Length: 410
Image (cartoon, rainbow, N blue to C red; front, side, top):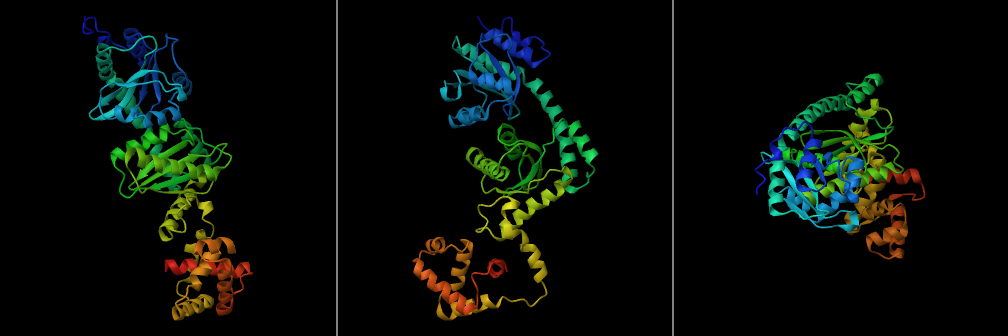
């Protein structure tokens, strides 16, 4: 007997739900159909047999992030992205996942989605697996239709986002209307994040980006667009208790997954300050770009800083540089220290910078310089004598710190 006789896949079906039920009837197993980013498209409705992972997927309308992460670690998703052959998945109790078989839906070398079959009361035979492959081919046209509709919506959202980024949509009522047309609920607070790649973002990298944005469930991305090397995101911070810390975690996770899963490295992230009015998106975008500029000028000092609010004094660098242009300004104290260092082959200027970097903590600075505390205290005394510096004056220390950083850049 073969499935080619009385083939259920030849029948016309109006919805993906009907198609899921057809597969379920034939294989006598619960079925779910997902898009390429693991969002639920359809599931068989008349079968109560299931497992916790499937229940969570149906309730949330997408696969839980912890399940996706486990499937990546187990090599399941890489196998599905490698070809059209069905992949068996053994029980993973820690995420509530029972035995199942998955097959990817392909069109011209691109994965459109996945069909998942739960093996609850029976194990699929080789003949069942052949049927599942044919089902993946039969449902392709429906997924292509969904993809076309999605592309039109994405084009509208891109246009709207660029208007926000460039300030061409500044009226509150117009902004609200556009969010409503796109069926997006604007968050009470937001930030703009820019992730800069080493080279122009390719079509394949764009698909990988979309995958990570839609499967990640920590912070929600309201809008995103790509400009040559830069991925620009409008990130919701609605009801986030520690937004700066969560933003940092968000970008670090994204950068880490791009490298680990897809081999894309050296991405530089930057985040704006936190804003509440969408008329400020342009300002937020400029803040994120400023962070990138600062990180380029001072890569070591800002290696672990990603957010505009965390840049502190570095926010003022460009302003001070502009103010100093055409002037004969010199920091006499630093000049004296540099002259002394050059003559005596010492490192008093470096000692001063480390001391200020460590917020004037003698113990921390001594540890960073790998010298005894008493040695550092002697150096600090010489610094005050040679440079005429008062290390108890916060205004004087701030100016010294700023000029030390500007010296490096200039």
